[in-house]
Image (cartoon, rainbow, N blue to C red; front, side, top):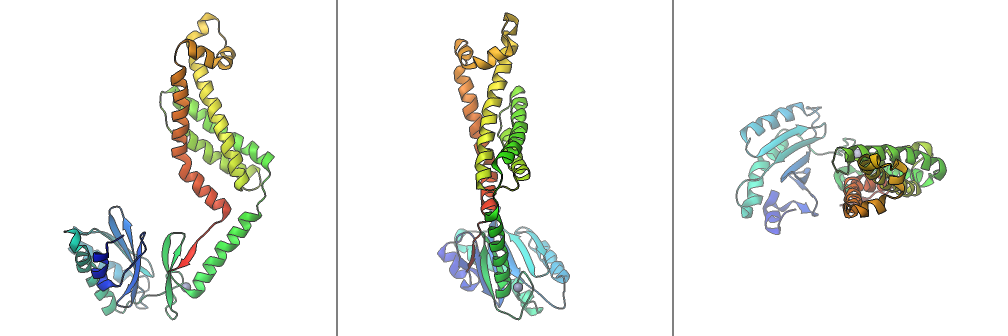
Length: 311
Ligand SMILES: [Zn+2]
């Protein structure tokens, strides 16, 4: 996240940078810094028995934001944390100093007013806490919470791995979902638009209905659903083109089934076959781009994979 030079000055060098986020302890308070929309968010673990829901802290932060409105974008609190989103002004070489100027008064306020760090999950402040990376999200936790959270992930993984879906009934569900995507594909194509939206609708519904009809979604179900969606979208594209062709040549005695069955041949005759191929290639490419995020998160979800590391 930060260059060596910045890290050596930032909060007096009490910052550990792992590339995606930073964590550290300054003046006894644990914090995390994450990049946020070309700026940063700092989360400071701050708890005070005399300010049970951190309402006073919120008032202070709001006031502080008014005083530094050019740099501080947003402030908020939870019971155990203070949040500040900020941008850093000035030259890159002075980044560390500039952030210090902005953040050190906040730390000073917290220390002076008796705020201290605790477990961000349970609020326990008697035990030592450590920073854990939970699936890419950093959190300060006591040992007991870290164990409880890891156990819950492990149990979830076990449950996911025990799912053995019914591929026949699941495929029926996936087909229904894919067909909705197919109809959307034809209708969107009919008004002359191309987008990955129809594909996304098909994929999301196919997964959901496979899950419902097939008694759970497992990796096998994801693969079956994807194959069904791709076939349905291919057929939908062909139907859309046959429909258009039929509209153009029906007066010459051609039926819709003629157009559908001999589509490639007819399109070659009127020299638009290349556009047809292009249409399906671009359409499927847009579908891949539009659905890849959903597919990856679904695969992660059904495999129950998790990653918890103590930093
Ligand atoms: Zn805890």
